[in-house]
Structures are given as C-alpha cells and as structure tokens.
Length: 354
Ligand code: SF4
Image 1 (spheres, helix red, strand yellow):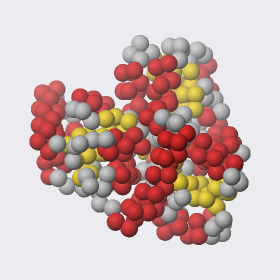
Image 2 (cartoon, rainbow, N blue to C red):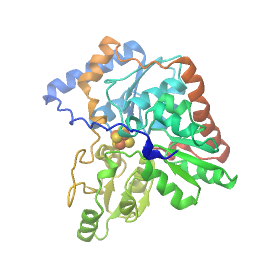
Image 3 (cartoon, rainbow, N blue to C red):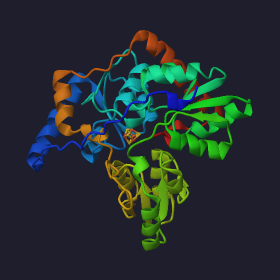
Image 4 (cartoon, helix red, strand yellow):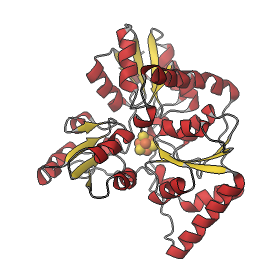
C-alpha cells in the first residue's frame, strides 16, 4: 500500500489562546488558590517544558515536576499523590493514565492536542500497518493511546536511536510514525530500513534554514541547538541535535555564552534557570516563504494557563479515561521501551523526548 492512497486529515492549527492579562495581585491570588486545592486534593502538577513559565514555576514550587513527556509519565508512577494534573497536551495525559491507571489524571484543557497526534488517526495508521505486516511498528510518544496500542515499540526522541539500531541489527524492517523529520534523522544516522508515516510538528517544521544561516553569521560564536523534529536543512546546521532534556543540558554544560535555540520557546524558562548568565536566541521561523503559524510557540501547549488550571481543580472536570482494552495493549510497547532503557542503562531522565 502506498501512503498517498490514504486520505490523511488536514491539520487545523488553532490560534494562540489569548489569556486575559492578570495584575500581580490577581496572579498571586490565583496561585494561592491553586496551591490550596493541590494540597487539599493531594494533587501534583506535572508540566511540560513548553508550557507557560508561570505554570512551570508553580509545578516546581509545589512538589510537582517539569519535564519531557516520558518523564512526566514516569513521575506519576513515583508519586503518592492520587491526582495528577497534567499541563501539556493530550497524549501526555493519556500516557500518564496508561502508566498510572489507578490515579485520577486531569488536564486544564482536553482540546490541547498535537499536530503529530492529529495527523495520525488510529484507523488509517492501523490500515497502513496491516498492509505492511513484515515491518516492526515503532511509534513516537506523540500519538494517541489507540496508535500506541497498535505498535510494537513506543519511543521518545532521546531513545529512538538506540532502539532503532537494536532492531536494525536484528534485521528488522521498521514502520515508523508519525514524525517524518525525526524518522528521517534516525534513518540517516542508523541506516535502518524504515517506512515513514508523513506526520510533522507544526512548531518545529517552521524553523527556516536560510534565516538560520543569516542569524548564525550575526552570532558566529553561538552554538546552534536543534530538536530533531526540525527539517533536515535546519538539523544540518546544528551543533547539538537532541531532545528537550538534551538541549537544556547543552546550555548548562557547554562553554558557549550564546545559544540559538530551534525548539518551542517555552523551554527558555528552564534553560535560563539552569544557566542564567547565558544568552538565548530564538531560531527564526520568519523569512522567505515563512508562514509563522506557530512562531516557535505551540498553540496547543498555550491552552494551559493559571486560570484553567484553577478551574479544573475546582470542578474536577477534564479527566482522562482510557478504554481498558486499549490501555492493556498500549502499556506493552511503552513498558518495552522502559525495560530496554533500564537494560541498556539509559537514563531516561536525561534522555527525554519532545
Ligand atoms: S510542539 Fe509540536 S510535537 Fe510538541 S505538542 Fe506542539 S505540535 Fe506536538
């Protein structure tokens, strides 16, 4: 079967949510209400690096975590808290629920999704897999529970390389989904036989190679940090290619004073916290042929704010529920990845994903 014969959905990218500006006093009151509710409900905030810095700071201050998507899920398994408030996008809430089925998982907005997840509907993906039964199905964490349930392996960007190398060494052909840029990067490095699903991240796909060359000339001593969901001509200009966690570590550990960062701007909060003396420059999403739909800020991640976090703690709405049969299937490839990481001594805390 040719992938072109499948009618893939058009991705509708929402506008960036415009949250009302809060006065300092309103913000402090809201934060206090959230702290009180977290305490009363024995709940913790589990936030992604791409969310609003106010949320990231509150998560850390109240004993929650700020991390990549896999670590967000693993954090839940290590908590006594019975409620996990996942501030991120929907697949992150689902993965948390898959790994923590006995806990209540709620999210500020269930409409917060991801272009990779949206562009990979489970029925079409399953049809594609059925047409290629000789392939091992490897899917990125940025997928629905149903797509994970159809896979043999789930991977994060930090562990994709060793897992694909491992499968290729056994002579296995791989059906990869959904991020074609990350898949192509893994294929170029490993030489594995890979069939690609044509998904992409609307944020990382917008980084522009020509404009990046220009900005590099203006800052010749800056290190260029690129997430592998970016296009190949952007990846080619990188000094460091890696997951969110790897890019944060690069800022903290490299001697450079300036960094040009090609990933969602929400990550600047953690980078600046780790290395306050360093200068961070957003990689360009404008320039020739640019549309700048996301402008390096994921609109779905932007659906998380102090206001709706407080509301969801108040109402208890927006719970993540997973069909038990799907959960039973989806946990297998996730656990396979975790076991692989443990066996290989790969510290997932430092090898996170998107
Ligand atoms: S930044 Fe890209 S990969 Fe991450 S949630 Fe947004 S659309 Fe998905």
